[in-house]
Structures are given as C-alpha cells and as structure tokens.
Length: 261
Image (cartoon, rainbow, N blue to C red; front, side, top):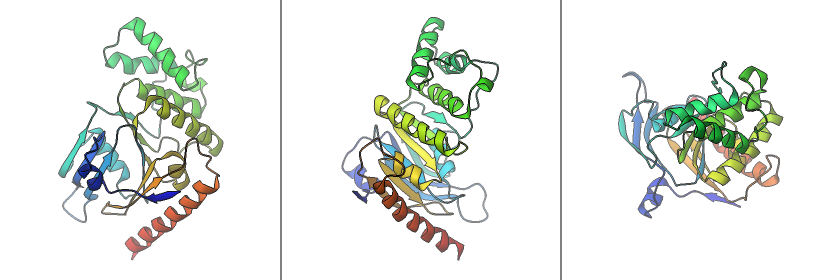
C-alpha cells in the first residue's frame, strides 16, 4: 500500500524531531533567469530513508549540496541534528595509493581516532559492507561495486547520523546495483541513519525509500511526496514496487511536459 506523504510543515507542526530540516530554501547562481530552487521545505526524521527524484536539472544535487553545507542558500534555512553529515557521491573518489582499509582509516583519522583503534574500526566497517576479505587491496584491484562499498564504509566512518547520497549507484551495471541496494538497506537498517538519496531512477527510489519526494524542473520545488508502505527488503521487480513506480513516473512525465511548454 502507498499513500501521499504528509507535508514537511505538517510533520513539523506535529512536533517530530527532524534529522534534516529545510525551510523556505531558495538558491540562485545568477541574477538572470529563474532560481535553481524556490521555496523548498523538507523535513527528514531520524532514521528515515528519503529519495529525491526529478528530471535532470531540477536541483536535486544542488539541494543535497546545501544540506551538506558545501554552499549556502540564497534564502531560507537548513538545520541538521548532526554536526556534519556523511557524504557519498556517484564516483567513489578513493585514493589509489591507499588500500581499502587505508581509505576508510583516512576518514577515521580526520575524526581524531587513534591509530590502533582506526585499524580495528576500519576492519569492522569493511566487514559491515561485506568486504572483510578485501581490506588490503587497492582500488584498482577492486570491482566498481566493491569500490562503492569502500566509499560507503568511508562515509560510515564519519560517524554521522545523517547520510547524503548523490546517485551513488548510477554508473554501475544492473546486477551490481541490485546487490548494492540490498547492502545499503541492510546497513541502513542496522545503523538507523537518516538517509537523503538523490536518483533519476524511479524504481530505485521506490525500492529503497520510506518516502519518495518529487521535484519539479527549474525552479526546483517539491510538488508531491509518497510514503512507501512496503516492508524491507523489497525486490525491484516486485508488483508493489512496479505499481508505485508507474504512478510516480506518470507524475514525473507531467512535470517534464509542463515545464517544456
């Protein structure tokens, strides 16, 4: 079963503590033309998995960068329960001269974790993403899916309650992506992180998220939300995922057509 999600302001009025709260955010990069984002409101609860969905150029990645604190909004405010969110991008961006464990330890070192403890914690995190036997390998010795698992372990090493993911599986083949969907859901369930996940893939969004948020094209606004009332784990080919993906895709096409006129 699926149902329209409550609006961010309605959830806020209910008094729910938010891991991420975006209030009236507008973003402009120049004075000519419409803003990239216009009056965006979004609240993500602790432990909630939210997918941002929309056509290319709608401002999904811009919004994620604002939440990450990589840039500041032109107007509005963003507050987080965590001091600093963990980040994971489409490219793993691992340091090629370091091993898998070394890349994870680098994030731990930045937190001030001692050398002996870093080694043990890196091993634990790599086991968490099912790479326990690959700790000594360098990135060129790992498959694309394995490199993304290392990147996920490195993000988890930041020890944040908020994980931001910008199309982390877009460059992977369908089989590898399916496996990593399972791994991400397992890790999310174990760690109880608040996840904001950007994707163009409607089925991916429905397969992963507790809530799917659809953004319009420029200026980027939140136009509709869906709460996904299906238990995890979900199969991407399951009838429930397919039915909701069809509904969301139809709304997405309407948004694209409206802005193309």
